[in-house]
Amino acid sequence: MFKKVQKWFDERIELTETINEFNGERIPRSGGWAYTFGSLLAFLFTVQVATGIFLLFYYVPYFPVARDATYFIKHNVLFGSLLLGIHLWGAFTMVFILVVHMARVYFSGAYKKPRELQWVIGMALFSFVIVLGLTGYMLIGNENSWWTINVLSNVAAHTPFLGGFIRILARGGTETSTLAMQHIFAVHVWLLPIAVILLIPTHLFLIRKTGHQGMAMEYNKSKLPDDNIDKWKHPDATVPFFPDQFYKDMIVAIVVFVVVYLLAIFFVPEVGPVYNPLALHFAPEADWYFLANEELLKFFPGHGLIIFATFLVPIIGFVILFALPFIDRGHERSPFKRPAATILGIFFLLLIVYLTLMGGEPKAPATI
Ligand code: HEM
Image 1 (cartoon, protein in one colour):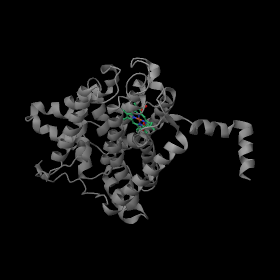
Image 2 (cartoon, rainbow, N blue to C red; image 1 turned 30 degrees about the vertical axis):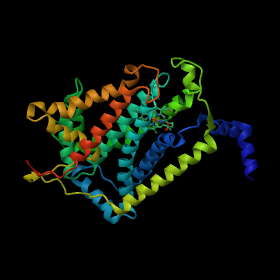
Image 3 (cartoon, rainbow, N blue to C red; image 1 turned 120 degrees about the horizontal axis):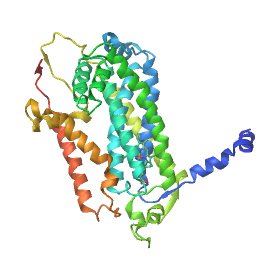
Image 4 (cartoon, rainbow, N blue to C red; image 1 turned 90 degrees about the horizontal axis):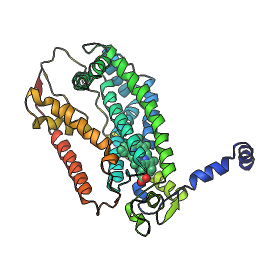
């Protein structure tokens, strides 16, 4: 029966040949586990879409009821708490794995010619995923969400030319209004997921076009000089995607999903209090991946300097990272033979970890 179905498709669209071609993609042999992070990101994004769709069955994107709708999902909907938990921990894991994937690409110099476009599209994906996380945080509709919308729309207002427009768009008016939620909702469930859904296949298509670079050690035997683009297309030893890489990707996806599932069960997300305009004290909490940014505020005390911590330093860092393949144009890939890039990378990773840990320390409630 299966053979008959296969033959039916093969006669029309050469299905078996297409699948074999896909599965036979040659990838560098060493470091197979390090290449699992990209597929893991695609898998985690699918989990976010799937859980997000189910949450939409009960969620109401209207500020006066959004927090209660979230509370209702957590406490009254069948598997609601699990869905919320997987959506939240899945998002956290995705941000973490994004950084790991970027670090792998950075330290192996895989962003260099001919893979500059993969990096640029990757940076776009990175930005969209971060904004997805932020907008998700705002959609909970609790006190933190209200303050996050206010504070971040003020930060975004510093964007040259578009700032004022972005603030009005995020707030649903000059002040945060009930329309804010609808706008943020549209960005979170339509605009950004569609952008990510279009960009992931583009990212993968480009990787197919240039081939995987993988780890620098896979090119030691090549006689070609480093500046020869062909050298970085033909690793010394390759394995087919299927079964070698496929099984590794599967194992990592299953293990990470089990971890996310357990986190969702044992660390159930808090819905938090409803926004109270009469409250006199409030200790706002950023999502963990913004703690480093929040901690930067301490280095720029005083109202006039806040803009450095909230906007200028992150934006400059982001622009440099975006343009990395065009700034670092050397041909060397091995992390041991380009010590400046390696030391800088390790320094910034450690700095971000340090600032995040410091930012996580409990804070005294602020007087409003
Ligand atoms: C949702 C986000 C992303 C997805 C689904 C994704 C997916 C993938 C996949 C499946 C691969 C091949 C396997 C691997 O090397 O792990 C890959 C490679 C690559 N990714 Fe990503 N990626 C994402 C984000 C990023 C980001 C944020 C960057 C950098 C800013 C980036 C830059 C690259 C580069 C340069 C390669 C080629 C590496 C090589 O040839 O060795 N990607 N990505």
